Structure formats: C-alpha cells, structure tokens
Image 1 (cartoon, rainbow, N blue to C red):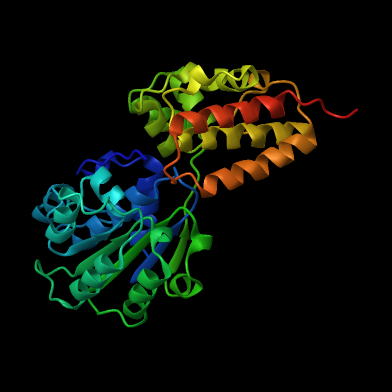
Image 2: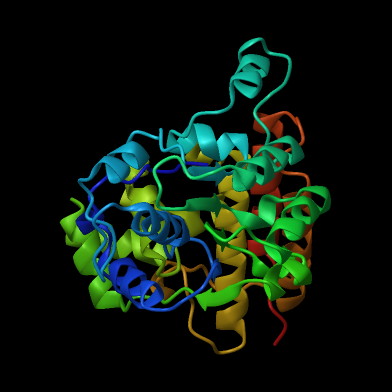
Length: 342
C-alpha cells in the first residue's frame, strides 16, 4: 500500500474534491459517510471537511489553510481532531500513533495492525466526551471505514446513536457494502463523484505527469485519478502496463520479479476482466484493445477469475513470494494458451 499525505493549503485539492467540499459544507449534518471505489479521493475529501469544521476562519469553499487550526492539522497535532485508521495507514500518511501502540511496534511485540483496533476506537469514544480544546468543536475521521471489525464498529455505533453536540464525524470507505447497516443508517450518505477523463488528465499533468504517462496511468487504474497518480509516482514504467498481457502469455516471471503478490493479483484480475469483457463483445476497461492477447477460452477465463478471487483471500499469508509469483504467472500462461470454442 502506498499513500501520499496531502499538503496543508486547501487550494491544493483536486478540483472535483474541492467542488464536493463546497457542496457538503453547505449542508447540515453531524455524521457523513463518503462512499465510492478507491482512487476517487475519499481521504482528501474527509480531511478537507474536518479542516473546515475546525478552521478559525472558514469560508464556504472550506478551510483557510493558514490559521493555527489548519497548521495544527497539517503537522498532525490538532487536539480536537481524532483520526481512526489502521496503523499501517496511520504510518503511511504520517499520523502519530499513541505512545503505547508505537512502543509495542518499536519493541517488535507486534506488527502494525491492518484493522482499526478496538483500543483506538475506545480512545476515540473517550475523546468525544472531552471538552473542545480550541473551542470550535471536535471532529472524528474514520478511514478506511471498512477496516473496522464488528467489535470496533459496535463501539462507534453507540456514539453515533447519541453523539455529543460539538462532535462531527466523517467516515470514508472504499467498500461501503462491508459496513454494518446500522453504521450506514446513522450517517448522511455521499457518493463520490467520478471526474471526467479530460479533468483527470489535466489534473495529473498539473501534478507533473506527461500526457502519455497520465493516459497510461488512468487506463491502468480504470479512470481513477488518485490511484493513477500513486501508480505513476511509485516509479512503475508506464510502458510496462501495456506490455503486461504479452508477458503473461510468455509466462515471463522476470517481468514481475520486483512486483508484490498483491500487485500481480490485482493486475491479473484486471487482465481477466478485460478478456472476459471482450469475449462477450464489451469494451475493455484497463487495457487498450491492441494490447490484449487473442481471446482465450471463456470457460478457462471464468475458472481463472474464481481462482484469482481465492488467491486474493490469502494474499496476506506468509507464503514464499517468489514461488507464489511463479505459480500465478504459470497459471495465467496456461489460461491464455487455452483455445476458445468455435
């Protein structure tokens, strides 16, 4: 997982996120749920709302970006903002862990959690009961909200049912279907907007990508600009994406030798999706038509899709990564060599 921590000034928000910030601030609500697939900017939007709620000089478009409150959020020290994330996300985005949690990780007693821990949620509930330190209320940001287990979610539910008057909540999720219905029912729902292709290209180029890099990154990420930017900034060669299908046809393990198992699985999912789409006359989403190999057997592709879903459930297991990469590439080669029925 890679993630970029946004800079302090609100003007740096992507234009489609800035527009949504203005729209949501014009509405009244104590708990928001920002829902949509990854790469559309749930985290930047959630943070923009929290900044605006706590800002000393808020405007209709959001926080000023330069007051003491905005600065405190930028340096991750605001006393009235509680951020609930898995510890892996907290570390990636620069949010400090509690002294106890950081000590356990530093002492190698455990690894950073990939779930939002119930201990952190209990601390958040206690935070909600305290008086605002800066006098502008308090905010709780939960991201990704689907990383709450049932115990953690139920601990939050009681506070959402009877929230203190000066606390606002913003939950951001990439998988709203994984949330408890009782959590969803107590929040105002906002579906993230997809920016059009031209706006996404323009924004990626403003972030330093060339036009071909922006086009290739958007294609690889299914049109999701935030994911496209992270992919481009990871150093992955733009040309590698268009060459990926042929590498799988050749069974070229060396092509993916520096890839993680999770990255290979996701890429194979996308390739399988596009081949299935083309086989039934639909338009591919992640690859250009000319980059796709000749159609494989529909039966083999369907079985491959089920196999990839099974591998995805065990992606975090401590298997030998090198052997697993070889097995996945070999499986892909076998499927792509299958002959479709007349």
